[in-house]
Image (tube, rainbow, N blue to C red):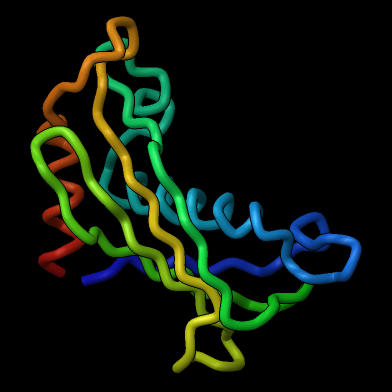
Length: 138
C-alpha cells in the first residue's frame, strides 16, 4: 500500500507567478521519501551519513497537470515502482485536497545503491529492502 504524506504549500515554495516552482515539487516528494523511511524506523541521521552505503538519485522526472498555489493542502502518495538488488524506482502522485480524485503532479525518482568512497554499486541493505516490501504489502 502506498505511503501518504500531507503538506501545505508555503510561500517559499512558489515562484514570481505565485505557483509552485517546478523544482520544489521534487523537494516535497523528497520530504515524503524521508518521512516514509522514518515511519518505517530508519534513522535518518544514520541513513544520510552512512559510511558504508549511500543511495543517490540518478534520475528524476516531473509531469504537471495543474498549478499549485500557496496555502493549497497536498497529499503526496509514494509507491515503489520496481527494484533490483542495487537500485529502485519510486513513483509519486501529488493530489490537491480540493480535488482528491485527480493528481496535479506525477514524479519518478530512480535511486542506486553505492559505496560512498569507491562509488561502486552494491546491494541494497536489508533495511531498505524491508522498507520497500513494507510499502507494497500494507
